[in-house]
Length: 267
Image (cartoon, rainbow, N blue to C red; front, side):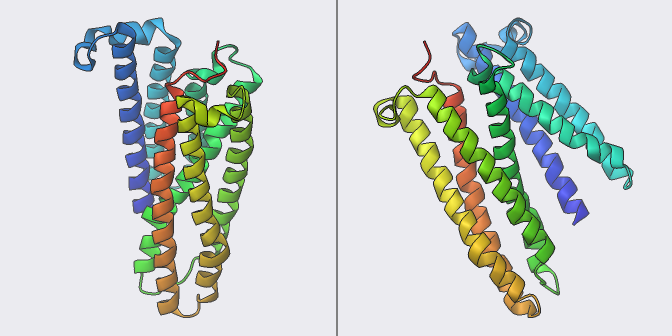
């Protein structure tokens, strides 16, 4: 499993770096009010002259540091220091994301910024556990000769997904109350429609996760002594998790649109 997980981590680093660079490029074009492909010379102004650019540069530096640490963890199997430092990189990346958004616009140390940080980390934990389980771990296990259900892994997956879901729900409710003047704005404003769509998609992902937790996981564990049945159940779990991961990726798209839009409560 280690080579597959290591490769997935590299995919994550590349995707995160590409997304950061593209967002900075798009921001430079928007601020300069020029077409995207004419904004190259203005990138430095975004980097140096705006908090968005500075936090973007900090994110790229953190990703480079994370890649180096991951390489160290790959090369030195017992490098506990490298593995312990990687979660710190993730937290600092989330801080950069929050500080470049609406929540920290008024005060970098506000309650809104703290709640948004928990929201971003909770969403990352939820999507991360689902992506890794659906596309890396469970397919490898299901394709193995034994096809035994990894009961310990499924229990941990359920446990951490529940924690992430609780974090997303509580912080999401706080954010909705903070940015909306009235519940009617969920259907009366463009921002509200996007937020409503995001909430509906998140609800669908929760339903899929609930099916796995209360139906799929117990069935796979119960069939652990029967390799054929366990393998079939694991493939079903993987399929549901893959659908859930796609839904969550669309939720991230909605979140990106919200991040680039002014909330109704903004002056």
